[in-house]
Image (cartoon, rainbow, N blue to C red):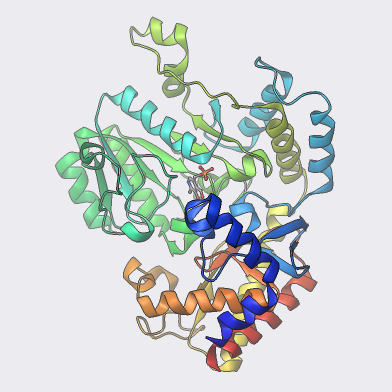
Length: 448
Ligand code: PLP
């Protein structure tokens, strides 16, 4: 394909880096979604809304640190705080004042945060939230929504990406997978049926509250309200996985935007300002199961939880500075405005080019829907709430997406692979016009 050839000719340094990476890493990558043929770009540095590859090419960035960087790359205040902390040590193996400040900020911003336990990642946060729910209820089963991603641990690593059908991932015990019930997003009847059949066996229901992958398959607000009502009725712990939506959809995450209070919330990404970190936050009576004295007073065994790097001071300062900026400035609103302008401008380009695709999203999300074979659309007549997973899964659609991503890279824009991207508050008019110009050029390449 000329698109692949043009990309490869421009990126010999990335190709060489990938050739070596393949000798070190299975597939040549350290995160599944970074895999792409012929090779990923190898990035040398990043600043604000942009990054540069090892061949010296500049990109407008919509990888956004997999969603961690709402302030853009290398934000000066975050970097200064990290540098200052590095001089004071990276790990005390002890309590410190920064973890208190970080926790106080989370409580100030996140409506349901009565108590907090820090982890190192979103995966660890959902693992702990589900463990707390099982311990608190004494029930075995979990309920999740098809296609929603909650990290890669054994209780949740299926029913997403290649496993829309809920087939257990290789290496996961059948009896773990067998305790997880899947419901289709927005299927209120299906939800009611599962609740009627299994409500008293379900410990937790977990979801990405604005829909899977930053709202690529959006959830109706009414469905999330129904889930809150059903879980309350059956004594099920409702877990909002706000690893993506926390501090992005609103200061208080999707729970603030939707006006729904979950029992537990999982956080990561923006939480730690671009460094590793996560947390499970929520109802005091649930998280007190981690407290040796409170658990003993309730006559139950404490839930164990360790983690060498939990609340390490470097992640803590990056998180503190990021959350303070989000609290005190208009960064979230600016990121939403940029995303809305970008969606409109890309749709305008599609109309002008007569291409039957659509760009959609809510809050700071941008999703490019190219699968016209499955769902004839026009940018103006497209209803994302009508989307189901089948619409995203046609092979021809996937091939189109890969070519689109490579062509966009050739023209200086790096989108996330679903395809779409989280935007940042650092994106501005120059990024918007560069992105739309690259999008037009990439679409033209695809048509050639
Ligand atoms: N939950 C959601 C909604 C996510 O998007 C992710 C990561 O992308 C995770 C959990 C897992 O977080 P981590 O990659 O920090 O383990």
